[in-house]
Length: 282
Length: 122
Image 1: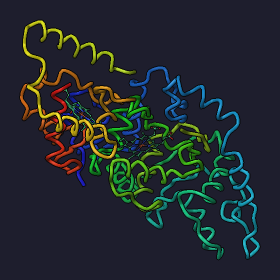
Image 2 (image 1 turned 30 degrees about the vertical axis):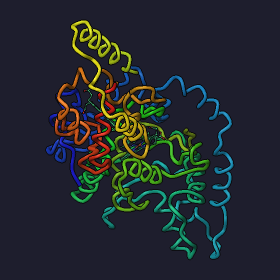
Image 3 (image 1 turned 90 degrees about the vertical axis):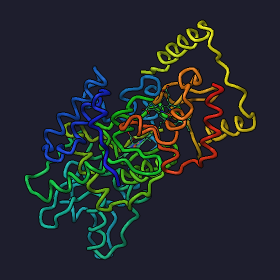
Image 4 (image 1 turned 180 degrees about the vertical axis):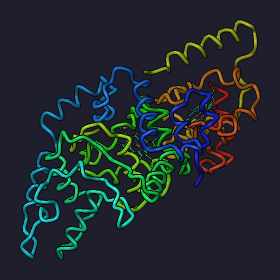
């Protein structure tokens, strides 16, 4: 795997991405990264308030915005929220239910992802849900779609308005996980040789065929997402996998260490934006 | 947001300047079969998919991450340089967003030759 050498590209106005991807950037702190990153998008899309980026491409594209707003009036994901609520309330064979692992409160979005110091790993909400099921003798769910997306839709809906606030503690292992996510983000990969940043930072607002590339800030807020293309709900890691395949790179498994670290970095970069999932996309 | 128009105007101005200066615009008729093959490979989403990023020829719904591919002969008189751009754009620009079609074997050498023939008709 090659890492982007964006230092030269800095000359072509890529200052933010370069500053972050630069070798030395692994030494910059998460909070320094966050301000560079936010600044980049604020300059790139002047007049778009920070929280608005939680709406993906519709934060910057007036044309598709109108039809998207109409879709959100009668959201296609509504039945899934209900199915998720039923799943949340459903009793396990042992008489308990999912709530027993989450203090009985479905509004958990803001608590994930977080660093688990004991286990030295990034904990995500889907992972916590499956661990709860397994601990109670139930079967784990598929991480990309279906029931897990339903229950995430319900929990996210109940969490709407909570602010993203991912803290990276001053712990070398936590920082290493964060850095791994960041390197993943800036590394070119696949036969087409693209990094996430080259599409969602450098080319944000530009067209790939008829798709406008969404800005990366806010990318972690609206999950799970109902995509018309999927015709169903999907999780964030399903999207990671799709974006990896798009450049003909081998995707990692949903909830693999690589994707959890990526989620950790990406969500930190969306700090301050409200969770607004589930949402609808093209 | 779309900077296509700006690029197009620039390139058009360039093309006019060149016509005006009396330089021959049309390439020496390349093998038409190769040109047709080159166009097919360039447009194929599973092959070149150049339209994802470039306005070119009569291609539908092009992207705009790269500049419009027009007046190629005039702007790239050196065939080797044009071929190198398609083979591995990172050599000329390390930060490029154009995929290294030859280096990563996304396209065969023969397909790249045909694409270059085709580019010279634009």
